[in-house]
Image (cartoon, rainbow, N blue to C red; front, side, top):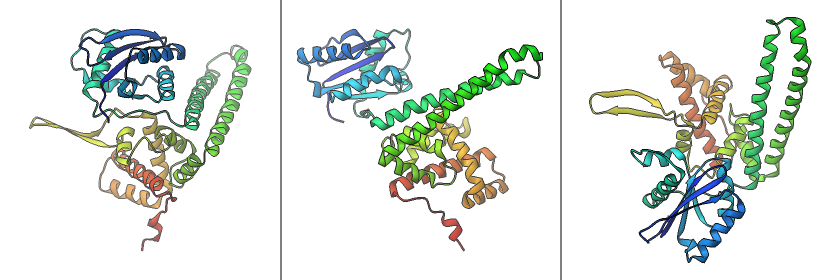
Length: 333
């Protein structure tokens, strides 16, 4: 991380961006602009006219999903240094705080940027194909949730008068049918997006060579790792996925059990769990490992968590090696 002289903390809301700029001058500069491309462009031009050295300026803001996407896009197009930081990380760095406002939050983010320059990792927009993949996958998740919601209506049939339920039965079936048709279209779109990107397509084929890793799990892995550029090794990704156990002890009085952290990507953790259940059915090595540990008296969830970790390491090995997974267990004597 290079040395910066200006730190701009931005509190992102749906309609506005509150900012605080800390410079070598003793008094920080604060203000508010609209969360639109026109306003952000005008703000950057104002900074340049005021003599702000943009190559010595670091922009830091919370990763608020869609609301911070426009800001990240404009900063990226202007080739400026910025970092999207998890809100929890900033919150826990503040210590004890009382009260809350967007103006105060912007100032705290700017102070966080100044104090943690050596720790902050610069952000970058993922490739266009990954951005498209992410939004299509989000639509797929919403469609699946809608299908489950409408299918629950059919559970009422056995409890309601036949004439009463008939008034909604046909409409409900038609709705579910259309949603399933939409789901199939989204799945086809996801396959096309991956097939059009040579690197993503190759990585997906490598991932699917691992027993237990299917279509959806491979797609989600490509998304969250940004084509395996966001994580340097399997250990870090395992932590991100919430499958690495951590010690919980202090002195002689606190001796808690070693547990995984609840701070994790729950979707990724769920997919890895399903992958592990599939793997112990079809992978001879993991199946033997599972049976051996169960015979030793190990808890089922502990053994499954170990298998999740093994699968994460397999994932990163095949990607780094750029060769499909080979199960050496069948060649063992």
